[in-house]
Length: 99
Image (cartoon, rainbow, N blue to C red; front, side, top):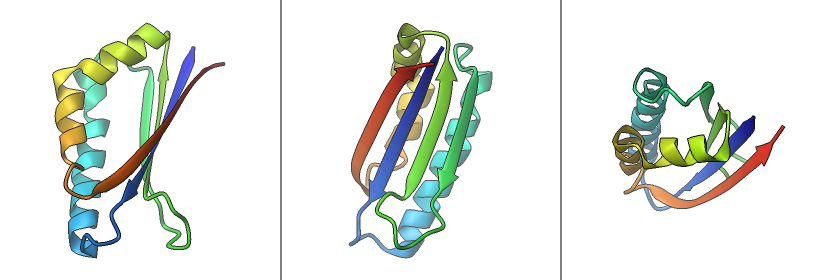
């Protein structure tokens, strides 16, 4: 099994309204993916409630293999979900590991 963890930092210069709206749309789109992408075993999206921390959004997923992570990452529905953050995203960090 592979755990897929992604953190997103949103731009400071983006308005709070824009960041919140984009984050909520992103979360909704990601949580809808298991119905469209059968390689997803589990997926969660958390919006950071601690303003003292750097990262704004955490995504956690479980997959059978790293190849399944790649299938998920390239799926058009996942690509579309990622674009929902495009205007407010500053950076992204990702770790994939076996467990």
